[in-house]
Image (cartoon, rainbow, N blue to C red):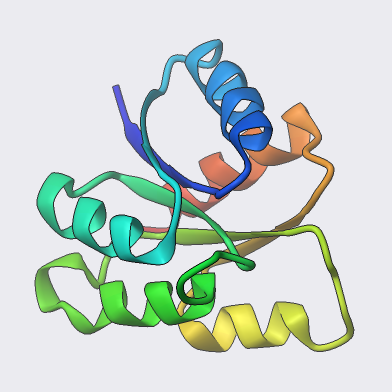
Length: 122
């Protein structure tokens, strides 16, 4: 089974994403901020990270960049999640090292498709 790190400060979003992923045979790890995300990514080496862009301590893009700077973790695909899709946000996420981009509210089919695409590309 593949393990996915879910990074979101909103407990309802984490619950929904965890529910969707567990029903699709994924294991999950959770983080509520960027610092936890970086630490858990480095310690637990998930197969993929779903990273909220708006986090309380640092942006999800900053956390992604920190994870990608670590040579052994550079290969972990990161899919950005955002509630506030503005022009240019997708490009910023891709430049920060994200391999995908999903707008909230979460659509179960979309998130599973993005995960499979990201996992297939690494």
